[in-house]
Each structure stands twice: as C-alpha cells, then as structure tokens.
Amino acid sequence: MRRFYSHGKLLLTAEYLVLRGAKALALPTTFGQSLEIESEESYGHSYVNWFAYSPDKLWFKTSLELPSLDVIATDDRLKSAKLQLILLTLQQLNPKLFTGQTNYKVITRLDFEPEWGLGTSSTLIANLASWARIDPYTLLRYSIGGSGYDIACAKARSPVFYELKQFRPVVTQSDFQPPFADKLFFVYSGKKQDSAQEIRYFNELTEDHELTELIAEISTITDAAAITTDYQEFCRLMDQHEQLLAGLLLQPPVKSRFPDFPGHLKSLGAWGGDFMLAMSQEGEQGVRDYFNGKGLHTLFPYHAIVRQKTNSPR
Image (cartoon, rainbow, N blue to C red; front, side, top):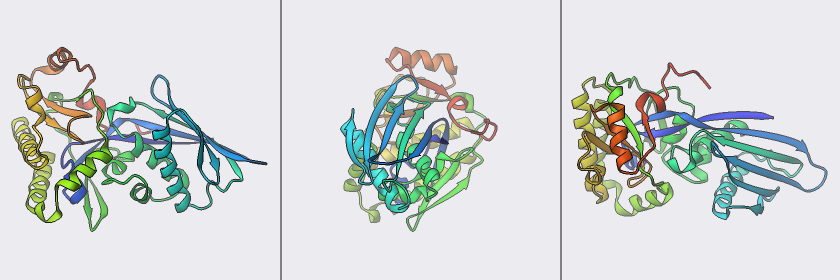
C-alpha cells in the first residue's frame, strides 16, 4: 500500500481575480485528505474500486473498469463522472497507469466535511499527481480546471503568494504571521458553492481588458495585508477588498447578511458559500455565540485551521 497526504486551502485575497493574474494570499489548512492505494496483478478483468471517507462515514464509492475507466457501479453518478474525468486525464499524462493488468483499491480519507469547500478535489488531484509522478497543475488544467492556488496550498507548510503569469503558476513564500491572529476567525456559511459554476459565471461577466486596474488594486491589497502588523489597517484592507469584489460581481458584501456583527466580515472563495473571515475584538466565545445565534456552528480560530511552519509536518 502507498499513502499520500495533501492539505486543504483557504483563499484570503484575490478570489475570482486570481484566475486573471491577480496576486493572491493563500492559506494551507491543518485539515486535508489522504490517499491510500493498494494494487495487485490482474489475471482477468481489472478494476479500480474506490472508497471515499469523510471524517465519520463512507460518503462515496464507485468501481471503474480498466483500461477504459468506464463506471460500472456507483452510489453517486455526478461524483463518479468527476472522478472519471480526473482519472482519464491521469491516464493520458501517465500511460503506464490503468493498463488493465492491475487491480486497484483506493481509499481516500478527509479530515474535514466535504461540504466545507476546503479542497476535496484539489487535495485529491495533488495526491494522485504525487502517486503518478506528474505535475499536479497539468492534471488540474486538463481535468476540472481552476486557478491552481489550491494545488499550491496542498503541499505548502505555511501561507503563500500565488499568481498566474503567462498562465503559469508562480508560488512564493509569504511571511504572513499576523500578531492579531487571535482576532481572526473562519466561519462556515452553511452552504457549499459550486466552484466550476462560479468560474463560469465570472468568465461570462467580465473581459480581461476590463480588469487591468482592478487586478492591480487587489494585488496591492494582497501585498499590504500580508505585511501589516496593525489590526485596524488589516480590517480596512479587507473591507476595501470586499467592496471592490462586490462591485465586480454585482453581489452584496457578506456583512450585509450580518449587519449587527461586532466586527468586520470578508467573503472567501466563491461568494455566497464556503467560509468567511470574521474579524472581531469580542474574543472567540463572543464570535462563536454570535454565529451560533444565527444558526452557524462551525467556527475555527485562525491558528486552529491555518497551517504554519510550527505545525507538525505531515
């Protein structure tokens, strides 16, 4: 058996615009996903038998015939179709795999709930690329697509800057270690967004030539937010970022949903779902009590979810 592990992701700045080259500050999470692969020689028909576990249950299983990778059994056709696309791309990038001479049993285990949007697909792609010894960004590009910042987070030990230059990923280390981290909290909105659908919406909404100035503004905010040691300045930058994206996406800022929140709020990732950043001086219990009162019970303090150099390696 071979085992691989990758970390999840949070995108602090440049959501959507990272697709067009804006500089983003990306945060790898302490939560991630493992991949275990067992193989044995096949003497007849060969298969991939796939079992995907969330923290407390088997949440998806399927079987695919080799070498065609046709789905022959599944408990979720949509998930199977997405997995099939990824595996077919993997097969094209490494033709030595899935030749029909080997049976595979694959087990994936998430540390987080799949609906949280922390990178179920990106951690899988990173793990599969490690197993197949191929470039994970290439696997992403030719399968489900995306900016790739989540792939950068998969193996990062701490926050990183991410940007696309001539469609190539550029990843650099960030020294983002806010001294006000005790005032930062990540709150699950209670709804998972469809990233592919949001990307399509964004692409239909905008043209590259319309975004040059906005991309520069967001990149400047990313640089400033990564180095400031002042809590109020950080909140001002996050508010500015939120207003700029609200104008672009023609959507209200997340604070409009929680106007009485004692602090600042910023959308993360695909707007309208996944996690949001809460900035408050009320302390963890005060923030938790507020969102519990709104029916939102999944909250993590900054250091409980963001991977730092001091976290134990995995």
